[in-house]
Length: 130
Length: 130
DNA sequence: CCCCTATCAGGAATGATTCTTATTTAAGGA
DNA sequence: TCCTTAAATAAGAATCATTCCTGATAGGGG
Image 1 (cartoon, chains in turn purple, blue, green, red):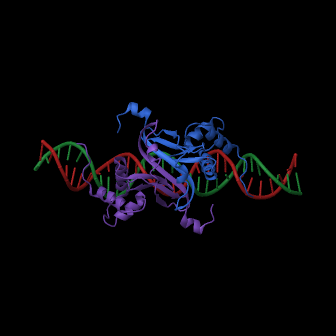
Image 2: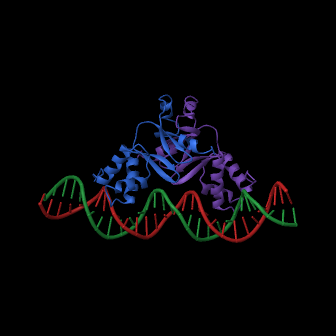
Image 3: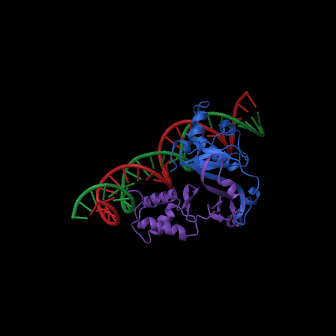
């Protein structure tokens, strides 16, 4: 028993997450992979995104505008989230201080997520800052 | 026109968030304040939590187990979220390095949120680490 | 070749959040 | 104090991302 079986769909989802530079939603992944697998169901995408995230092969960026965003890039980095358009951008993090966050007195830390919110450059150019 | 009107319910919600040490959901706030205001509606809680967060009087910790968590403590601190029981704990942050995160090349940063995930001490004592 | 189990599609169900509507209430001026 | 107006509210309906359920299919070990 034990480990999961090989799964074409799951491998495709993981490969897509790794290839892509953005931070997709389940629905986006579904729409994208439907081009290759026309009968891919949305439920399968949700199930596998959850499964991959639980295994640590991808990670969740959190919920933005009501939809969960995922990231196939496991390297240490933070995220900038635009409050106006919902864009998610990668942010380089200084090496310093990161290790100091990695373990606390509260329990066993497995992940550190740093997210910044604000207005992205594109929205700054269009809108008056709300 | 102009600024918002005084609101007994909203003031109560803000006061509760400030008094409490935990990181409540809308539903918890509703249940708690219903003891004082039996006809407080859940919609009112949602609307005012959103409004208070938009004004920066409280802040959102993000969605944990499908429900948004709020925080009345505006002082700079991070959060530790237990993957097992969903507990949210405050985490002291080192002053160093925080300012270096405060502004990036991606736009105008208004907030920095640092969240750590893992297993809290209570769950570590009970469960084998999954 | 036969089970056992994982995967999958399709569709129904769930549940947090938001929206709508009618009603109430606060605040400022007459 | 009374009136006017717009914000605030309650109640319940509506939305919509996510999960759950069911039946079907297929892979791998024995």
